[in-house]
Length: 465
Image 1: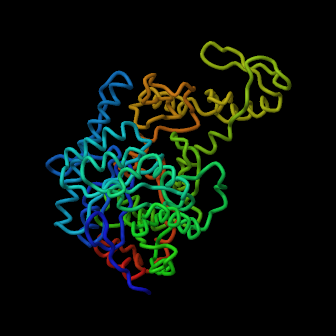
Image 2 (image 1 turned 180 degrees about the vertical axis):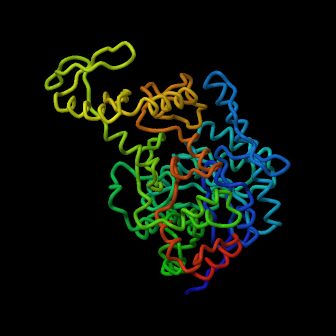
Image 3 (image 1 turned 90 degrees about the vertical axis):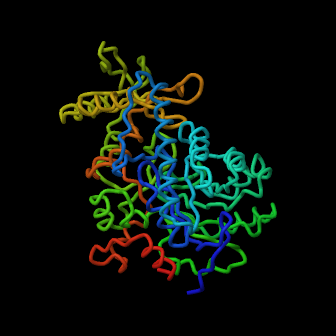
């Protein structure tokens, strides 16, 4: 394989190997510090990050506020404190080597305030900020104020062009690199546009070439592009190295760092990663963000699919074929179904799915009374973790609402990601993963259930495999 040459990233020559940002509670700073100590870029998550007590135990994030607005303020305080804690952990573990980045999602609630709070409380410890999940126009300005580099995540040249023309052209010196995240293969939330078919993955090569061509128009010939999503062995990307069409290139790994000794995910989660088969990770649109996301197909995802399958359209008055009255709600106010849908409803009710909830799209979904109560309780307990949430109808706007009905076809993303990160139950909660996770099972590096240290993993990747 061609030599994997170092690159200047965030002001230092490092291996062009970057730890992915991960999400809620899937970083603690130790993995990121170890990745930097191995000569690369370690990235911790600033998304509702965990804090730790003096004994190293996670401090539970308990919400006492009676209103969503009150709980939202508590969430911001937890996120800032957790981000500062993880920055310190990562900085100490790095021992002055590599670089440390923080990852935030622009569509998380109070993204700017949380990022500013983390950077203020961890001055001198963080070298760069990676930001995606939306169009992070203002991240460049924030990075400039704290004298660090910024790394926007995009899935097309068009998206980068919009960011550059609106904001980044004013802060060109701070642009450390551009992350191209494959919208079909990356784990977590994906940047598929409405014009792209989720079932037909595109080839990343021409898309990255188009991104480089766009960057060259702005004089960014030597600014690295960071390939994220679907990267496993560098040897499979050898034709990208020293390629004039691609230019300076680095590679980001989000899935492989999960299976390391420093990774804070549970032993059960790590064991499960080694059992996945091709196709066990799939693209779906259940997320309350409204984005597509990639997750492991477990009982949690199965229940979401079945919940949406038990769905019928209703009208408020007799209209067309909607002539059969059906009583909904505690007062039994009638809505109208077709006779065919009424027959389906009766079948579901006989199977125990006797409770109906309305969706924003004038449909009813049917579930057990216990599941319906859980959904309503989760919606009521919302702490405003997203800028706008389809599940609870929270919004960080002045009205505090999206203006639409809460959508029971979705879920509380904060609750489920906290639960899977802090417990052993990996089947009943959302498990984000990149689509290549099935490769843990057949990669000889992980034979006999071997779990490497971060250094062992980085050294292995640097060989090409």
